Length: 228
Image 1 (spheres, helix red, strand yellow):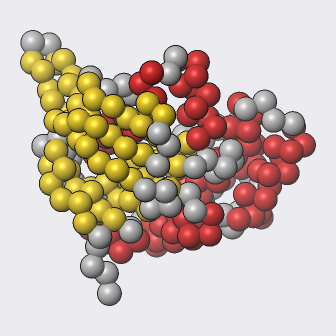
Image 2 (image 1 turned 45 degrees about the vertical axis):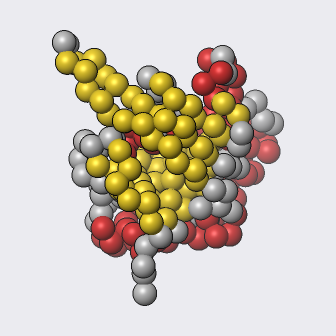
Image 3 (image 1 turned 90 degrees about the vertical axis):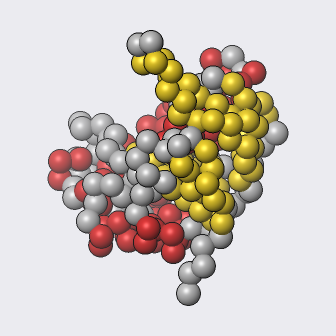
């Protein structure tokens, strides 16, 4: 599903070059729930942004389902992202003046889908994440955990093959975090989406099929967690 070949990212900080990624070659298979972990500054979020096409590498390749995405024009890259990928961020990134179901519907309108088809699917996703009673509430009327469930439903709107999640539990308490992770795990098992999630919490490993750990811009370990 995802393959990187000698992936590198260097940032210029004045006269200093910061090597965020130092040659990452890895394969992520279809249907895996992968945790990307490591200390702050290890390159895990940079890696997620590159494979999620939110940023461009300095060198190396990213292949998604065999497509070298670096060869796509900006227009085709945007379309590929919208059709193939869903995103969940730690700050939820909901639109303040839209209701729950309207926020979930946004990616569907981006693809030019029929209004009634979009709203019907958005309502079904609202129910799937356990928020049917909050469908017409605004962001300010929701808890953090509820907002993150809206963000997950929105990421699933266009039935993406891959969902990328960057520290989705960073602003949540443990109970809300477990609720979000349980939802990810259920969706992964029932719908077969590949999920790549950045996390810094060791206990999250119990949810992952596989953990790729970064240190200083390189892969330190790539293992299947030993969870009892």
